[in-house]
Image 1 (spheres, one colour):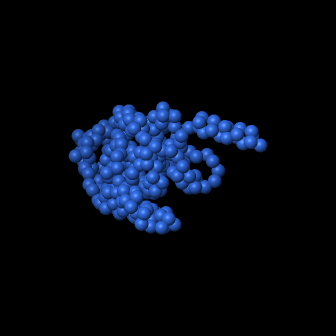
Image 2 (image 1 turned 180 degrees about the vertical axis):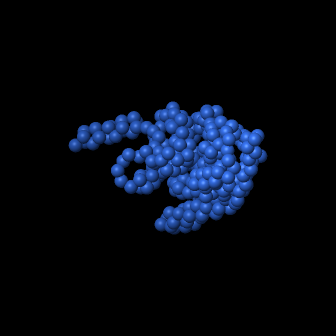
Image 3 (image 1 turned 60 degrees about the vertical axis):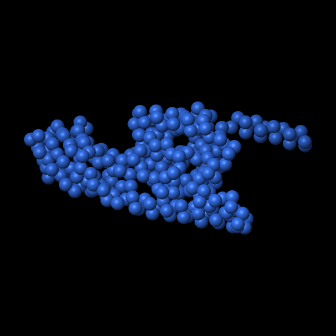
Length: 289
């Protein structure tokens, strides 16, 4: 019997030794074939996975979990158990913010990344974050920055985060009963999420932008206006609105003004530019003025 137990213990140690540490990627997902999905998957597959593999880490992404059962339960399990979490805050997706809050209650190591142009909520604006540009050069810079940060992570040390800083954890835990500790943390989490949502609302104030465009084909003004108005409204789900449109057909020049209610100006510009190219042709020249 003792020999069997010792054998099982040795096998368990061997499995643990050979198993990879896991890193769970918290990222906006979006619908299949959406720009949000493409951008997020591009960064995950082209940058995050290769860099993490160099550090012998197994990468887990929510929408690629193939196990049966509740996907929400599995996400929480990974957030709770995995050695590292990388959270992509681009777009301030509500699910991403919620999952980050849950991870923070675990007081485990978390790395934040975010596309340049995103205005972070007040509660996490002071947290160390890797900002990147979503292009080839930016991907290389992100890979280098991430590798540098991974090399400095000390898993023996318990990390700080906004929840525990605000609670003044050591003092707070000494002043409440053991059975109330979880409740105190959950209350702080609710407060953090609420503040994040309020900040997002405040930042979604209406902004305007004007694009100068140069195109290479004959266009009829009213027809283009209608197409552009419908396309931009559908693609942005009503968050970007065409306000003014003037073209000089002889010179193939135009001015287009948009109002938008996006917390992330970068996403608004992406939607505008992709829509202009669809309407005016891929060789259109645009300039934000």
